[in-house]
Amino acid sequence: MTQPLFNHLPEIAAKVEAAGDLLVFLDFDGTLAPVVSDPGMASMPLQTLRALTSLAALEKVSLAIISGRALPDLKARVGMPNLIYAGNHGLEISGPGIYFIQPDAAKRVQSLGELLRELRSRLEHIAGVQVENKVLSASVHYRRAPVGKLREIHQAINSLVSSSGGLFQMSPGLQVYEIRPRVSWHKGKAVTWIKEAWAKRDALAVYVGDDVTDEDAFLALPEGITVSVGSAQQTSARYYLEDQGSLQQFLGWLIESIAVGCGAGR
Image (cartoon, rainbow, N blue to C red):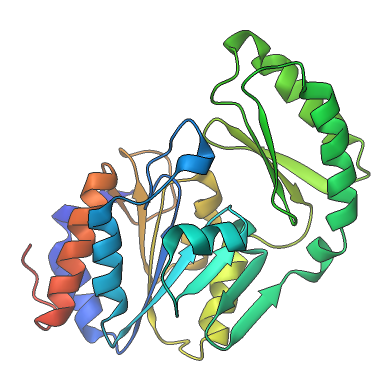
């Protein structure tokens, strides 16, 4: 059963202190940055950016930002060099000395573009819908669409994805539908690849995320410190935080704990 994180700081501190290295994975939208009606306006609060800067400066910490956003978009919004970035739900990864793009997804870029052109044609009469081509995957945002049109939006996406010959799959998110290549890859495989490529396989993994796509990563890190952001819900994460404000508090505690030798106090 998922436990409230702040009730278990002593045991977390013991794990952190015993670890030679930490590999900290953080989701972007809904975790580092608040979800907003216009995805193009999403940004991290200044306090969160300061915490990331302090965390990345610690010698035993390697920081990875993982997101459904396209890699260039993610890098621009975080704006910190020398981090590991995983975009498109881990389909593309880059960091100091490492690079990966999922080969089967790369082969479907043209097919995805054709699907999205047809989708835009079918949805152009509905106000508030945004079809975002992220090259390797796509997002259909409907936060500002009329409630009465949601069924039509779902049907249009589902129809095109279903007729793609198994090339793509559709999954729901927070007021968004994700269209991804149907390949054997997800955030769980991405974090495993990063751990191996980073040559620190024994590093303690800390993963914080809020989305259903983060569940694969939680499952891939059974020995790690996995944290779901949001009130206690059905999740594979070991711990949960109530909200993003609690994330800032946890990051501050983690930074202080490492800096002073992993004390257990907040």
